[in-house]
Image (cartoon, rainbow, N blue to C red; front, side, top):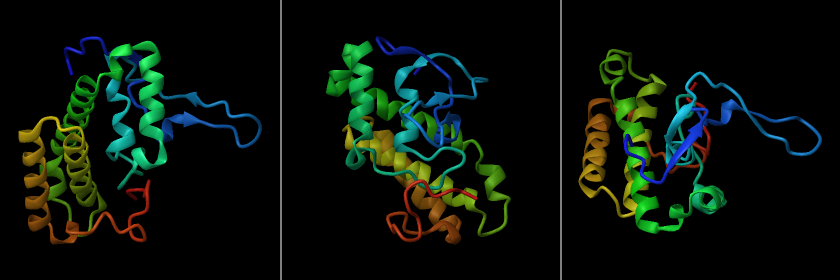
Length: 179
């Protein structure tokens, strides 16, 4: 991620859904807000929020079936043609998602000290599994993918309250809030 190759981009540094301002009526005119983390970074860091839960979310939707994945990639390729290369794009996206999961895993000691039922534990498991699923889907970072799945499995055992089925659309619909 520190060597973005052809993918450096100016980012607000926090592309989560709660950092986009939309008007309730009139034409769609989305505005990014919240620029305290702004800077040049790997462009695919902004795509992470499409695949992996951010701080406010327990789950995210499936960006492939909703078409968001293709829309993001096409828009990125207009400015960075290398985004059309499946290998480069997949590796960069997998690295960005796994990097985010590792950043979130740094909170382990804090979450481990929380009482059973704390939603942040569920979110960490969901984050690790979503990052591993994204990497596997792009056939990138296989060893890190296996590691992410193993850590999620161990957390499910350590925290029985976090051993839940995130695929259950009734319990965990897309963009389920963490709180």
